[in-house]
Amino acid sequence: MTERFASALDLASRRRPSQPVLCRRPHAIIDQAKAFIGTFPGEVLYAVKCNDDAIVLAALAQAGLRTFDVASLGEMATVAAAVEDAQLYFMHPVKPPEAIAAAYSRFGVRCFALDHPDELAKIRSVLGRIDDLELMVRVAVPTGTAVCELGGKFGAPLDMAASLLREAAEGGARPGLTFHVGSQCMSPGAYANAVRIAAQAARQAGVRPWAIDVGGGFPSAYVGLSPQPLADYVAEVLQAMAAAGLSGVALRAEPGRALAASGASALVRVELRKEDALYLNDGVYGTLAELTFPELVLPTRLVRPFGPHSQEDRDFRFFGPTCDSLDAAEGPFRLPSDIRTGDWIEVGQVGAYGVVLSTGFNGLETATAVTLDDPPLLPLPGHVVSSVPTSARADRPRRVA
Ligand SMILES: Cc1ncc(COP(=O)(O)O)c(C=O)c1O
Image (cartoon, rainbow, N blue to C red; front, side, top):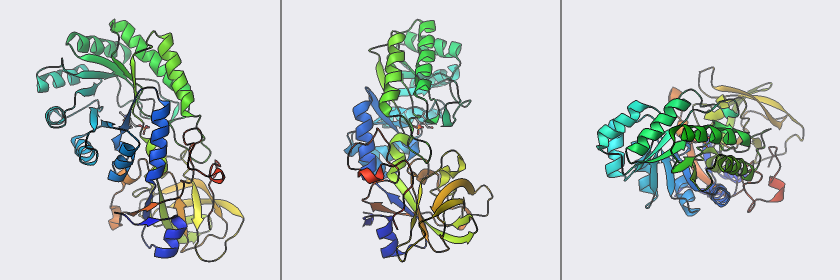
């Protein structure tokens, strides 16, 4: 059991932490997962790579989620240990043969992604058959609509995707199509475009897909980035499916960030202030890994439990605690102008791709974890409709101290 506090302010005043603290909010994950499941008209697979913390997995299970997109045997073992009746989908397009074998025999996986004929040959050779599998062909889709691009690494060109789909169907597998538009995709239309490309591959193959998996990429909220509601994304997907004659085909999504980002913040301490530069005790090698994306400005608030602070805000830059010059972020981060050495800052939206990427680089301690009961710094408009006080719905960082 982790220690529980009402808020970061409560934590700072009672513990005065000298090390960074990961502040989990499982209630936010439950809210987000329920909202996503309630809005998305298909199966929702959580992308475990985003945050494989057992508390996150338990919160998702509490929200009713049982299906997981996994990328490795390690993730399979983690999910199997945390969620008894979990169903696993091996959606990494390039897999070691040993992982394919163990996924099938040890974890009961029957759904595999692929984007190349040699991967199909590998799956066939390892398992000796494909007629009891779902084979999801990952098709390449255009980049340019997401804050964190994934383009170029995975995805078969259209002709190859079509022939893979045909080969999967001819081998007796249930053939499906999948894609990934990039993480933090701010454009619902990007999904419609990707569905059109997938539909074109299906037409070319002469195969009606068993399922279309629209991948991850659904956005969370960041400073200056207020996504459209999930319903708008769903509408685009459904319209594109209908236009392509694919209504009724099973639909899936693999959200990571949209479910996990608001589920944690970090309480960090200012170790030194130099004008507008704040040197923190955590950074890109710790819970603040996403500071490396300049467009993702994480929400911040001063946590000063004792004494008043200035009502005037100004822009700050952050530097992390390691000697690496990449361990920095321009922000700008709006904080009270009199912030000083020894103050704490709560940095929100670190629940996705933060904790999982933490290292002990430079001999620095990784954050200890606690649970907080208050709402996240930036709830996602349109996704969370309950348990968030009106005052917390602003699209701006807030201060508590
Ligand atoms: C195959 C796959 N599915 C889902 C995701 C989750 O993406 P996001 O966190 O943007 O929702 C990723 C992230 O890299 C991925 O590679």
